[in-house]
Length: 193
Image 1 (cartoon, rainbow, N blue to C red):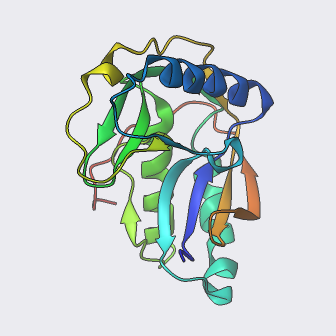
Image 2: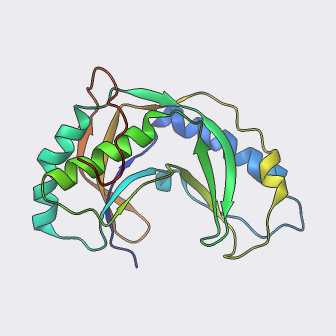
């Protein structure tokens, strides 16, 4: 059972409706001979911004507050649109990927940098923000039908993020921060401060 601690964005009601419509188009497009889809529930949909730790730690949770508040001050509220779907064969994940230029990557970088600057070494930085909508079996052959799914829909609004604990398939919010930056920061190179 996973017990990871991470920062993430979870869709509100409007964004969930947009993602549900995309999920329904995925189900309709799946050929009958394609591998079985294990759909994620709407309460599981999220974008991981930064993996903080592989195990829950009260002291670490307490130490993240100031760092995450500074990250929230750097990036303004924004929207992003889904560009395409992909299957990540190593994990069997069917993911929705944002259009290039999304501020999601800037937000991921802000989390990584703010945590590092406060002395917290994140377990893993996010280099390709995504929403996992379903799983196929690991190592399934390429699924060309996935590329044909219409990904159009309303932009998904990112106005806040949470510190989340994965308590075995259900996410527990340990804190929430509203984005309140006035202009997006420039992207920094990984590992540079």
